[in-house]
Image (cartoon, rainbow, N blue to C red; front, side, top):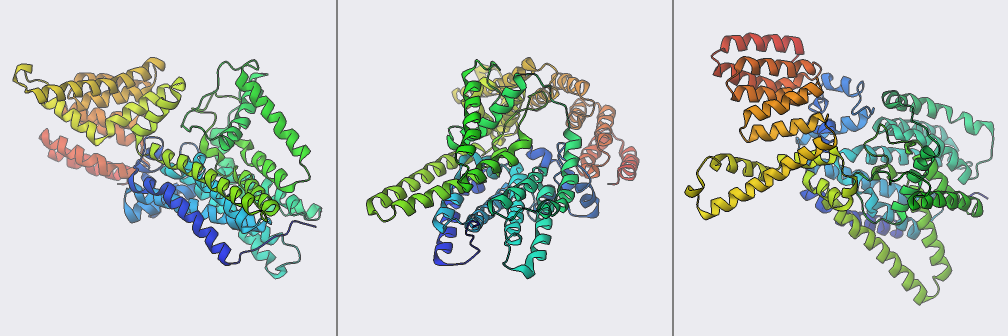
Length: 589
């Protein structure tokens, strides 16, 4: 007999379960919504500097669905940002709140799916709670750019629920075609949010096995439309990011197995979470870390065979495999990081269901013993509370760029890369408080020390220390990676803010030399030239910045006011008017 399935019923248990889950999420993620801002880890690329999120007109909608972001085709995620930006501007609380609402929707769908899979409301609540407050999921929820994870997971689980209704042979026969169409629709939306949703096609096959659908060739044929919907969209991203990994035995195999075991360890032993983890060194089977990973992998596969009669256990393990498989790396040649917490967002669903199922079985077995039942409930509450407290702390890490990268350096400074140093320096540079430090330093640095009072001397020493610290971050990045153009841009930006035009020019020129299409470097170089009285050179640099991004016509809103001011300063108002007309005509402003 197939597992007993349940469908939505708004009983008291259902309502209490939903309310408890939502309350836990509000407690854990409330501070993130209220206090956190944007960070300099892809929030700029996906939202802040993405011109296609600036409005919802035809000039944006077309590019949203015909371009990629960071080499990934995620038009639905970009469209969601465009809608929010149209309605609320760049208020970070709005974007984080919507991430949280989507995460809450995912958790409620887990409640419903757990019931559909035959788990009691108590067990379903445990599954949804573990998923909802697990600290490994904070990156996907508290990070604005994590939108693609919560958005695709929401639609993927809607598709899975509808597939379960479609597969309910003998029930709701007149609605089967409707549910099949809904599966297609939600699967398409999921893959438009993130190509990783392609793995759901294999999840449907796994779900057939779990529900004990009678085998027939038709089970495979009915999946063809799903592949036709998902594969082309996911193929766009594959075409952009396709690479042949450098396969070396046993290094490649050890890397793959370590990635496989990494996510398992982090889920079941959530110790500390950062953006960058890095491969353990040395990469050899004699390294105990890799030996432990191989052991865990073997035990995992053996466990599937040993506990094959427990369909929920097998479902959890195979769900993990089919949903994480495309993200496991064989090498780290083309990736800033071979693993990331966000990759485990949806693949952890099976284990959450398994934990909920286990809680249900224990309560059924020991529920009549008041002491045992009380102890079990206390343990479950303590476990969820511990996860929630860890997640609460982790949301604070995403408060801003400085806290994010500072946490990275505190926890895993052994994997400090040029990118981490550059991001940390840039984070300090963008803080309003740091700008005040720069302004104060510029204002009093030329005054003789004997004219400064005691307080100003202390402030000056503090300013020099903090400015030097940021400069050291950029220099450390350059020391690790001498051709790191963004580190030179950061140095140029710092010197510009300090009023040191020659050094600003020198570093920006180096950034442009290393990357000919560095829009930000050209834009800042124009300001440096203007500050030095080189108006013609400033205008040329601005024009070069616009030429780099002809499809980003809205950047003219940023460029033209600066260009007008420079032309006016140079007494070239008429020349500016002609240049403006030419730019608007050429770039469609």
